[in-house]
Image (cartoon, rainbow, N blue to C red; front, side):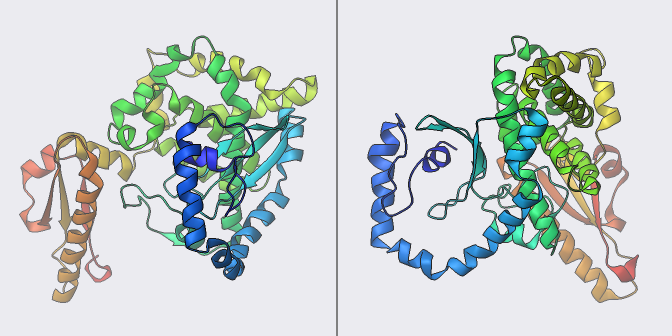
Length: 383
């Protein structure tokens, strides 16, 4: 993330010169010279120009999405943000994870985002374009391998990414300065307790309050996208809840309320962030947080996978009642592939997880009693 942030503050190759004071000696003295050498030796600029038509397809998606909900208009109207320049950058020399950045260059404050759309996110649906352009997976295993081909959904995915990062810009300074932030860590602890593996591989859990920041950004993204396509907002909320953000629907409602109040009073939305943080204790207290979490978070395979990590054993079960023997064999092969993927998925866990493949006729009462999750792979003819 450091490399990404500072690369966005540099000019295009092959020069790649800092546009402002960086104060990052290793980046300036070691990394940038190596990158410039690479750009020259590979004649990168000529290579890029020869493939501009390919990149133009991505730019068309970005431009169409931003025309749907221009950030300067929406942020000015809904958040009271003024005197800010917006830049959305997409580095092509180095593939970096998309993230917000807000530098001041020559006295001009810049809000925006840069990089590729992340693949593993709390997102309702992936697209073929999303898979082709993304550069990150969850240890090589995506939790959702399904995708659709939809230009409109491509644009919504990108627009959601942009407004998520702008949500950080409008809320992070106030959250950071909130004096009682650590008193709200029980919100994040509730997720950690239920899904310990999720909190290991998702970097937003690596600090005690990271998911609180994410919640505000997700709520702002949902609020913005609801102005474009309300049908997309509901599955987005449910996906975020499945990731443990049990407060996100409530937070969306508070975001909408205070954005409206911001317009009426002329005060910026950021002035109300502390008030929302104060109100979070009314939504869930340390005494009832587990109850609220259970009510709001759906039961999903993600939670089951986490339970498997905690128990140290997962049984993948395939059916044998298929009248076509070749169908049963395909079921067995599918179960084996699922097991291999799960072994890869669990490779970063603190202790070994035993993934076992069994036909249904060999499943024991002990398996059913002790294990929390069984994945049943069946062919259509065996249903």
